[in-house]
Amino acid sequence: MTNQNHRPMPARALWPSTLTSPTARPDRPPGSNRQPAGAGRPPDRLAVPLPTRLAKLVITVLAVLVDLVLPIRCAGCGERGIPICLRCAATFAGPFPVRRPGLAHGPPAFALAEYQGAARTALLAYKERGRRDLAGVLGRTMAAVLPWLPGAGPDVDGTWWLVPAPSRATEARRRGGWHLVRLARAVACALAAAGHPAVVAPALRLAGPARDSVGLTAAARAANLAGRIRLRPEGSPPRGTPVILLDDVIASGATATACAAELTAAGLNVTAVLTLTAV
Image (cartoon, rainbow, N blue to C red):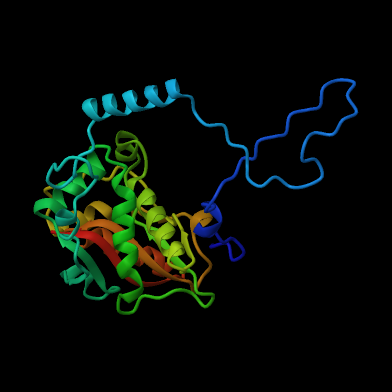
């Protein structure tokens, strides 16, 4: 049973916009009764020690060496100096509706790009090749279209609830973390920055030894997931909450269908499915 009183912390409360670290005033010399200069009035500005010339030189040299050894390149085309260039980012120009037989009786599904070309290359770089720096730009792209999806919407308090599709634990360990949870957090941050409160609700898990779905037919994909997508009550929103299901790719629609069915059975209202790509 879903915990009615448990609401995950809003994204805006998790990422403060600024952090300050004032520098303490020096103590007075022992035995001295004199007050430090300027005592009794607030300082005009924080005393932040500047790095020395040597430290600046070391930082510059290290930055050059890192760029030589591990240069930042566009994940789509390889252009140097940027995580993803404007041309490749423009391939995620959706959303467009995704129609699959398995999705016919579920929530509307949308994708930002076809699973090909630069979009496919960028997605694989993020998902399989450790390009975590892409989470921010991909998350902002999804957040920009989310408020305009037909049928999608926040709860009565104006909060958007984002449920990432689950992954196999073995894949998450191999990839160094739950890539869809990380993506959902980036979406939530971008929504909050735009004035839309958002919560990431990791409400689903993949139980049992599900096979890798690559190469499986639509029927085999559905059978592979049957009964294996389960609710995580500790990560679930209250019953009746409208939620958005987030994924990275739709192929046959089996994963989206199974996830939506499990969430609906828990009393949640899946208003839309949004993915980065569609096959």
